[in-house]
Image (tube, rainbow, N blue to C red; front, side, top):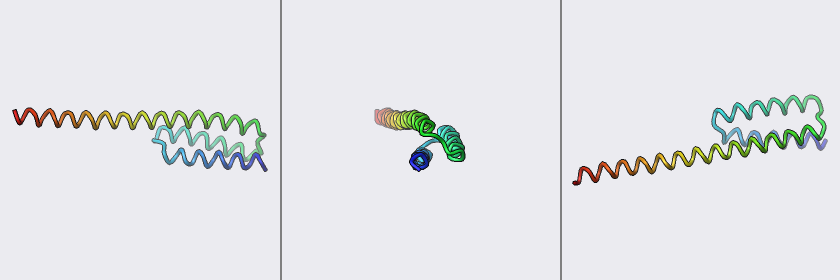
Length: 94
């Protein structure tokens, strides 16, 4: 029973990550979800749950780092666009 609850917790965590992830990350998370479903079907041992927990933790870090990187790129693009517009305005007013 404890193992089944751990699997449900992991599945919930993956579902949350899938909502935040981009297409590439979704595929990785989908693979993990398939692995979890297989484990659930064969009544996994606690060691399998722990391995999955580590795997999901690593994927979570990867997804969060990727999302932070994407956010930083968007901020740089926004700043660059603002500087470009400012440069055009100053050229026209000269």
